[in-house]
Image (cartoon, rainbow, N blue to C red):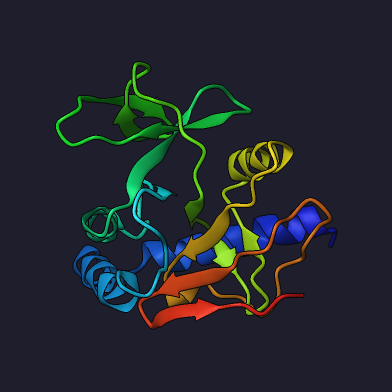
Length: 193
């Protein structure tokens, strides 16, 4: 089986396992993650942090984002501009949210576009080496590559449930490793390759 097919298989398996977590337990796990990470993710006030609004059975990191904002983070969320591109629009309290693609809502086109310094990254699967499998569209891979082209090196923290861990992700040359993963068991950092 080639790497692409293996990734698709692992993606389907791990998303299926995530879907089986009852909604109440997903919420409980999401709140536990706030306790594990809200004060352990280090950053200076004013640091731009990209979060996301949950879709389907994803972790709900809105409580974590609120805590990071209390600590001085400047928040943004991804919005789908087209089939190839996401941008990170600033999330300001009270601003109207609009449909932003991929089943999500977020700030409208008048919101400021930011370059995140920390990305809280949703994913399908991850391994102990910090490799991840996304949802297959490549939006985050391309967004991270664009940030690198600008000379930026954002910190990548994967967000998932424990059931999304796999023994090994079939990593490819374009894949960028995570700095850490946050699950209901805690915040784990990965050593440099």
